Image (cartoon, rainbow, N blue to C red; front, side):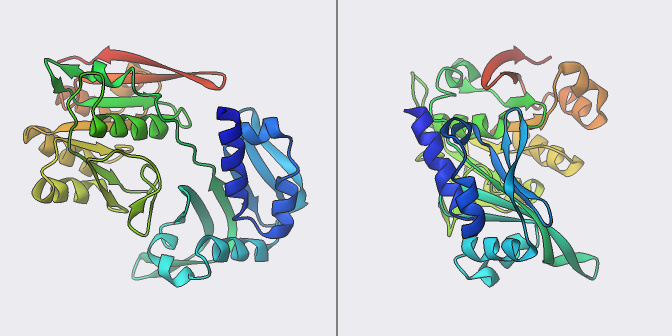
Length: 304
């Protein structure tokens, strides 16, 4: 059943490819379709599919016009309506997919205002994995209260997928957990994948999504406006994110966030993350261990 769903998601993502490339993509064996994570298009190079083992080139070269057609299909021929995200290098599209873009930046006053002469694109084949967090979510509570938690793994380890399902579980409540009001700061549009204001992914019935907003700006916004019990965010990367997270923790709000790290030692070696540990913003950590195509979640108490 899951394999069939994965193949269906592959086929849905392929619909954003120009017809010539789509036909080649659909010729892939079903086993590889089920495992595929991305389509990658680079002008002058073969269309490729990213599999767990690496990129697989297909027998079709990408022309510059193919990248323009891709954007037209993804925006339903209303590219002007997506100008805000195009200048950030991505397009959220119907069905929960996300397209990353590279090209020539149009700079005005030191700010990128658009991308032209597109050179490459990536279609991420977003797949919900509902239920992967159901056993983990109750373990994030102490005496009935949610504990601020970090989700940790190297890039590509599945942090965003786990974050999405944890948000759903916290928002819905299950296994003796009370349902919580969750504010999701979805800066890059990868968690809820909003399309015209509506999440394309299931993030739960009590989740409020602030889309395409920097975390350092969004955290004080939802604190003032949405009265959250938990704030969820993907990838703490800069000092401003940490300061805003510390402010939320000081207001008694739980935090759920991701960070690129493969070990506690790696956290401690980076000044920003070492300070995060020292400030005791988070109480728990979930390490995501990848074993082939499977993930294993290890819960750890952080120094407190």
